[in-house]
Length: 262
Image (cartoon, one colour):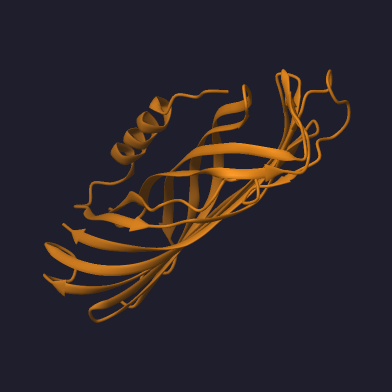
């Protein structure tokens, strides 16, 4: 299920050129944060263990909190619509225990010790149209796409089970912003849920950022410092190459950010 990000980039450019001739404003937002992880996972090969997978707790299995990550976001405002692109990569690894057997070509027995590692990339492109554009408050609704890039492995001695999936997920999105002088608070929310032929996928993301302008004008050549909170949940219940997979992950955590406006 590996999927190229090239169509996403091409779609972004086409939307940009087709949308408006207004002079844009750009916010470039590098950020550093940490995610707490909780949820469960289960994988079963029906040829080895028929039936739905029993699940293991992610934290107990060793998929601990990340050690901190660098990410970024770019907001391009051309009046209406507003384009938002964000990206980040986190790593969750450690030693743990599983309580439910995992099978995919081979078997990892339970209960037993395991070594676990997951690299998670989260990338989003959103396009929202203002319907409350004022000097104090603006709000918008739109569409977008999220891409979850999951590369995970659970090992027990010489045996291991791994998955490497890139999942593009369509989004319904909204934004709300409030500005009071040098202070501004912005919230982005997006999500989608789909069920088809017994497969289910759900995604939800909430990104809150409060920032204070340190220097510069209202929009251009300005610098701000900010604090934010991001909550992301991903649920998957599907069949892949014959394996039955049940995964539910939820990430929560704060971040610090600088905002450069042009």
